[in-house]
Image (cartoon, rainbow, N blue to C red):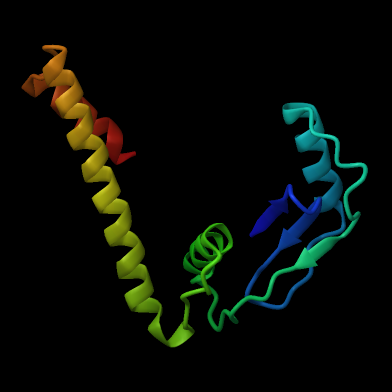
Length: 132
């Protein structure tokens, strides 16, 4: 996970295998910030600061660990991730994604009903499209 501290002018990263980022990542992040956001990072710390991370003990739970790190970084709460509990972490994140998807679909249905657009064909297309 790569994060930016706008307040402190720092590039941060975390990952669970104790690897280092490739050296070109910093210049690529700086390029994107400058080109697409017109953000000047010339006064920032010119190195990545490592954020402490739980260890990833397998080769396939990096996505769950990244989600947990992002949530922790944004909320300021501790990282909720234990490798031994990876199945429950997966279920938690899938449940949250499905719940959010249902809320979005439900809100969209309410809005379309207000506009007189709710019908079976429209919902069938929306449901099919939202799978991908």
